[in-house]
Amino acid sequence: MRGDAYTDMHAVEGEHWWFVARRKILDKIIRRFARRGALQLLEAGCGTGGNLRMLANIGRVTAFEPNAAARSLAQRLGVADVSDGLLPAPHPIQETFDVVCAFDVIEHLDADTESCRALAALIKPDGIGVFTVPAFAFLWSHHDVVLHHKRRYTRAAFLAMLQGAGLEIVYSSYFNFLLFPAIAGVRVLRTALGARDGENDDTAQMPPTPINKALAAVFGAERFLLPALRFPFGVSIVAVVRPVRA
Image (cartoon, rainbow, N blue to C red):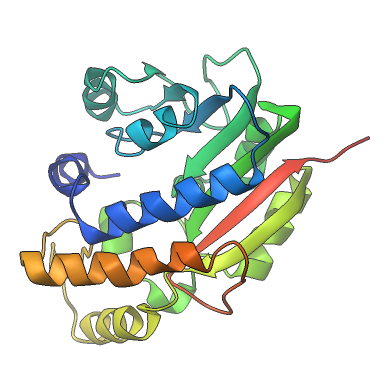
């Protein structure tokens, strides 16, 4: 990810509709599929730490992040031990976890299968992984360039890659479904018009407060439908996985 993108993200991720609603959805999904009791959680590629407080409300959190500036911001939150680490390696993690999270990380990696295999090795036999990635190549925009994405996935391609990494699919769905027509329309139009710089970096700019609250309410409402439903399309994909049982 471009260095200034971390600064931009840190400035908005506490209140921006996309981050706020996504945390609510992921919190619901983790609580639905994780076992009960005291949990140990790992976030791989935690960035500036926008998800760490949410995860700390579920259990004890460990994290790693390769970018030094982002890692410093995440460590300052004081809710998780944040170490230097890369996927598929090297990373400092020697234990296994009840929940291993990689939220919009895998699309940054050249070796996605090998990285997911490394994540699989960190999941306890009765634990789960919760991974998200951006969806659909036709949504590719300058937003993806700024964030150094390597690819966007279809659900079928993402699940096939996870299975190739030795993971069993427990649940998967597209999400950010309700706003998909608007987001897709705007991104395709901006790309066609040659938008550059920050013009279509959707998550780097705070919209006016009334719009931000409305978008957060619409996107966040999906937590009442997921994981009971599976959406047929969306801006992102979420998968809950577990190690293949021998």
